[in-house]
Image (tube, rainbow, N blue to C red; front, side, top):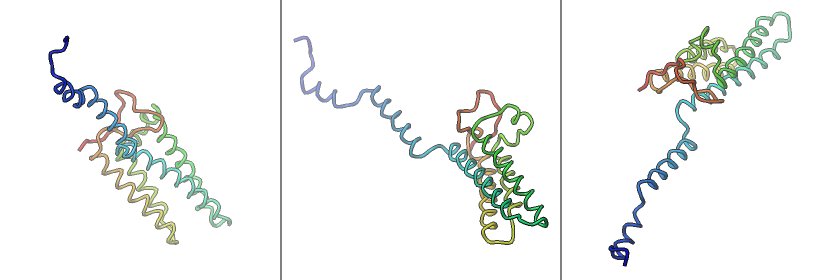
Length: 173
């Protein structure tokens, strides 16, 4: 007799989820959405890592193809591809204060896009394979430049979030 509500009323109120359980379900849904559909910032981060690794691979191929002394220019270009590809891979993984201090353009999407466009123009060569690769770099550079105006916040890093108060662009859409 301690309860004044009828059994049918208790059953109907227990079938509705409480506010706390609805909040947990919404949080679980957001986690699943982040796993299945990563944020645009994380997608750009992963795409930048892919481009950097592709740059390393293309640099190795350019160096391997330079077998005569007359191809010394191609060999040096391949060395630059490997070096800057390694650099781009490292800055996609971790934020370095010296990089953001001396090369702030590499810590915003627009600057990264300009770099990818630059490397795309350097990749243009006679064969169709290199032109396709160059087009991939050019198109990716344009996407990164547009992301400056359409993505909230600056670029992420694979080994963690940006430190609070760090620079970085992202105009927000």
